[in-house]
Length: 57
Image 1 (tube, rainbow, N blue to C red):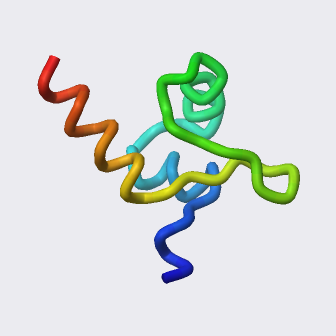
Image 2 (cartoon, helix red, strand yellow):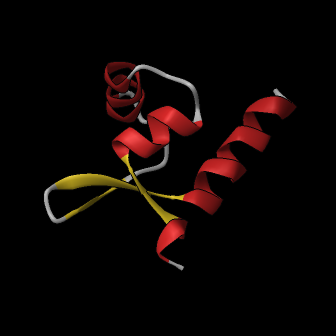
Image 3 (cartoon, rainbow, N blue to C red):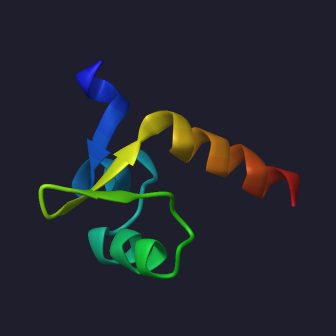
């Protein structure tokens, strides 16, 4: 279940992005994220849903 929550570096690797690009996408509200302990965190299911939604456009 711990794998269901990702940190920014894991998201960048998962999406094959530079870490700075991942931060930029979060700041532009293009990636679903939340703050956890002062760091950006991501639910894997939310990322996958967001990807599917983008594919529909």
